[in-house]
Every structure is written in structure tokens, then in C-alpha cells.
Length: 341
Ligand SMILES: *[C@@H]1O[C@H](CO)[C@@H](O)[C@H](O)[C@H]1NC(C)=O
Ligand SMILES: *[C@@H]1O[C@H](CO)[C@@H](O)[C@H](O)[C@H]1NC(C)=O
Ligand SMILES: *[C@@H]1O[C@H](CO)[C@@H](O)[C@H](O)[C@H]1NC(C)=O
Ligand SMILES: *[C@@H]1O[C@H](CO)[C@@H](O)[C@H](O)[C@H]1NC(C)=O
Image (cartoon, rainbow, N blue to C red; front, side):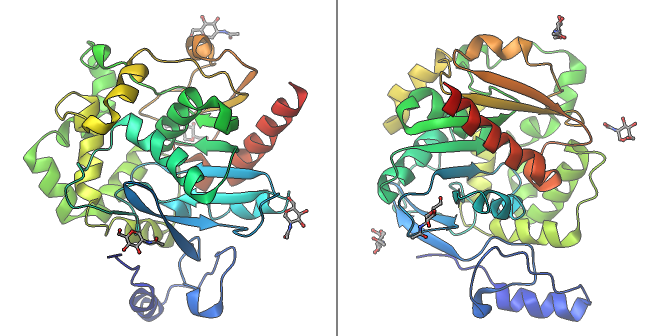
């Protein structure tokens, strides 16, 4: 049922290639260690739709405050490898799920539509919390992860003690999906449009790691990521639904693919761009390309609770991997905002 990360094979390849044998895994037994900067070990939990792969820093601790960290595209849970120990040291139970289409997260049924619509990404977080019997957590994400945590925080505020989101608010009203944008802005989102085409689909299928390399470089121009970081993420792209989910995200947002009917009512609520009323810390990386940095004023109307906005210098779109301390600090900051409420 599950696709398993071929770690041992990769370890041999990497060792032969002469890369240093790094192990950033936050916990794990010797047999689960890998030479790549991965979050391990992972667990699995069924929801009504998925078997979700997730990392859990303290699976048996039912009293620790919980932070759920949600990755973007084309990245993986390994994005959080240096964030987890910082939060765990502060007493947090840190959970990082692989989104649908990534890692060994798997659809339970072959007939479930492979939808990456915003409602599904948010609902997956709540479904995982239900399955793990977690009542409330801090949600933190970037890129697709921002979409997921925005949706979960807006529609289920009673499950969210605080939200951290790069680029503030990315919930989409489908009525504005085709709004005219300046050519320079569209040029930065070139891959959204490539993924609408059969050629884009095949190109992603034929070289997912190459796509990641290009998008990491273009979307975070000054970031000197390592080959090992790229290899760790690339493992998550071997999921049989990866290409379908990755392309569906853009096809759905641009109205080239309908949503899954089971999320239709949630999708309609999201079209109204619901406000987020939980304490929020929002981050705009200065060197991000797809969503240029702002001072937060343009998204202020979406936040009705306490909200602090920071611009993050020297950083592209993947804040947790490029600036793990900034991302961890934002989570501690939102927790403090909540305590002051
Ligand atoms: C998850 O669901 C699958 C398919 O229904 C089933 O085979 C598996 O045993 C379930 N796993 C758990 C832990 O319940
Ligand atoms: C659970 O986490 C809290 C800190 O958040 C810690 O004080 C406690 O000792 C942990 N409990 C167990 C059983 O590890
Ligand atoms: C990259 O860093 C340099 C030096 O800090 C800076 O001048 C430049 O604006 C940065 N590039 C981008 C795209 O942010
Ligand atoms: C924030 O940016 C907007 C336009 O981008 C500008 O009008 C506003 O004055 C800025 N606010 C602050 C506090 O700098």
C-alpha cells in the first residue's frame, strides 16, 4: 500500500559519491538514520480519505502544546529538519505531515479524485488532528502550506491556538482566478501556466528533481541550498500521486480542474475569503519572487485577531529551511500573542 523511502539504496549511492554523511534526523534509531537531512522516523495515520505520513517529535505526549508544520511545493517535511529541535527544546510536540501527493501519504481509494484544492489541503490538517485526538494546535506553513494553514485556521478557529503563515493570506476567491495581472507578475508565475498543459505534466513526471532545482533557484534567488537538501526533498516526489497533485493545485486555482464534490461546501465558504481571527504572525521573505514582500497592510483586512507582520531579510520562499530560527521564533511569538489575549 505504502511507497517506502528507498533510504538504504540512496545511502549507498551518496556514500559512493563521497558526500559527507550528515544526520540531522531529530530522533530515530540507528536503522532509521539516513545520510540526508530528513525528518525521521515517520508514522502513518488514516483519515477518511488518506493514510497520512507524518513526523511527530513526541507521539505519546498528550499534554505538550502541539505545533503542526505544513510544507510547500516542491518541498517536503524535511524543510522543518532544523525547526523541529528548536521547538522541541521549548516543550512543543511538533508534527509535520506530508501533504497529499508527497512522501508516503497515500489515498485510501483509487477512485478518490486527486484534488489539491485549497479546501482539501486545509481539511487534511483537521482530519489528521481528529485521528490523533489533538484538540488544538498552532498551525505554521509556507507556500502551499500557507494555503493549508490559512484554510484550517479560518474555517476551524476552535482547533487553532495560533497561525504562522508566510505571505500572510493565500485563500482564493475563484471569482477572481482570471483577474488580469501585469505581465511582469505573470512572468514570475510562469510554471502555474506550464502545469496547465499536458507538456508541463509530462515534464514534471520526467524530472521532478530537476523541476525542484529550477524552482528553488528561481523562487529564492540568493539561497545556496545543498545537494543533500534537494535529494531529501526529491525522495518525497516519488509518490505515485505527486505529479497529479502538483499540477492539480495550479489547474484547480486557475479553474482548469474542478474540485472534489466532497469539499464543495467548504470551497464555497472559502470563495468568500473568510477572516482569520486566531492570533497570527505573518512573514514576508524579502527575496521571495512569486509573492513580492509587503508590509502587511494589503492583507490586514483578513485578520481580525492579534496579528504581527514581519519582513524577513535575506530569505526566499522556504523560510523554515533557509532561516529555521526565524520560523521557530515566529511560532513562539504567536504562542505569546495567544497568551496575552
Ligand atoms: C488504513 O486504511 C487501510 C485501507 O483501508 C488499511 O489497510 C489499513 O490497515 C489502515 N491502517 C490503520 C493503521 O488503520
Ligand atoms: C510532555 O511535554 C511536556 C512539555 O511540553 C513535558 O513537561 C512533559 O514532561 C512531557 N511528558 C512526557 C511524558 O514526556
Ligand atoms: C541577493 O543578495 C544581495 C546582497 O545581499 C542583494 O543585493 C540582492 O538584492 C539579493 N537578490 C534578491 C533577488 O533579493
Ligand atoms: C505599507 O505599504 C503600503 C503600500 O504598499 C503603503 O501605502 C503604506 O504606507 C505602508 N505602510 C507602512 C506603515 O509603511
